[in-house]
Image 1: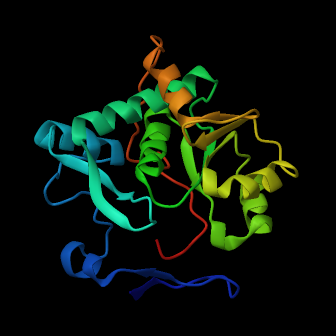
Image 2 (image 1 turned 45 degrees about the vertical axis):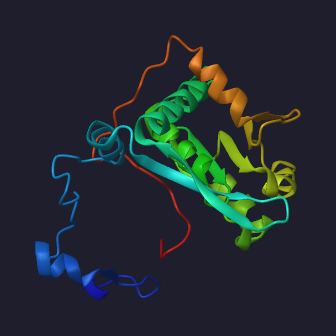
Length: 219
């Protein structure tokens, strides 16, 4: 990275950018992939990819064997992955998530993290990342600072989320698990609700809409 804009505030850092931007685009942001120059948003990229690669593998996870070792990858193709994102998005709308609402994602990398991310965007909601290595106090701050309407959490982060909601009011709690008990609802149930939601309105983000709120600097 190279310094691009100096800071006018002694308490703030200068703006640094990747040197590739200087080499290829005069310092201006590189806003599109070379392979998809007409895709201006994250959802544009997925929508175009579905047309190009519909039945090819899109996202996958390694299966865990009974002895704890990792097995082969299990894949979802582009068409089925986007359909799952649509159903999750429709499920969010069915429980009252609206355009501009902030939805926390508290999960390790997995297929359902991606489903949640794209599902939020298709509903007009803004995903917000939470981090298990930050500790509960930092995640409580993030939840308060962004006024989260919903948290989507992996089952391994369940106890941390219970700690967060004991201090911060969050309207909806979704668990990345096949089963959940109140106040949580399972992601499978949300996706099922979405598949039955005939009033789903897919939101089409613009390039100026917020795609994600992150509280780390290196991602």
